[in-house]
Image (tube, rainbow, N blue to C red; front, side, top):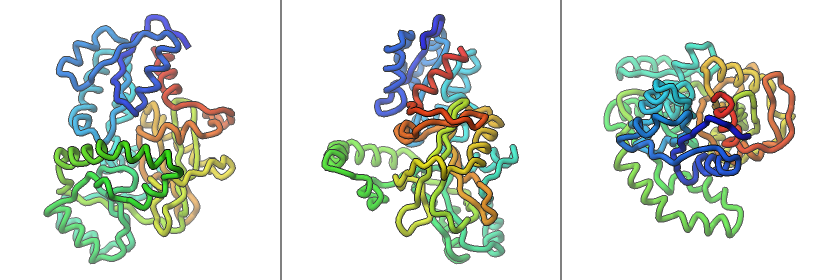
Length: 343
């Protein structure tokens, strides 16, 4: 794809979608320049561009402080942005997602959030357990636990309205799953090489991110789900796969146990994902589905960020009419092509 009168700005974050966006522009002779969206003069620097691509992450403290505000402001300039504000304002915010999905009548797993301790304790006293406790932020199933009893829930409530919770996982958190993802010596050496930088990043994030406190969030527990279904929408494309739970665990997120069996992807998950993305007016979203006791798909959570290789390894995608299109696609390429098409 080539494009005249298109001038893109790309925030370069090594290891993110920007790696392929830069390669794509160079390959297809698309005018672009590298920018730093955290620069105090970023608004003036973008006045002559037509589009901005910025793959910001939940673990970037600066992004949590300013990404939504910058993106909203840049859109006011008439510049097309990925992600736009409709796509990302609710990113890494399970509380925000609850209200958003409820407002459009999406079939989410019922969620309950309280900002008053007395109200929360009263609800806990009448609730049925188990329930799933979550913090507002966090990825890969960190900050998610199964609460088996009323007493355990009340203990969490005291902490939520007291000392709070550290929202950033430690590097050695979830060690069993991380070790399980090491398939060979090359994987091990790569992790070993990144170890000092990873430790420094965790320590920096733990210092900067405040504790989560002043609210408590529970989701209903839907039993008998051995996997979740991940549907990733990019424009008019739907990519799907299954993620099996961790060993002896109810959580699938972060397990790495991905199965690409298109015959096992429930068609209703695809239809719902397309509809919800359209209702939200989102450019791209990854949906996690599980099933209730009547085998109806329920949305656990959504995210505009996802693992690019997991989507790339899908053998194809469905369009809005559920026609199947064979072939591997990098999500970054699909995203930038959609943005250029709109420009």
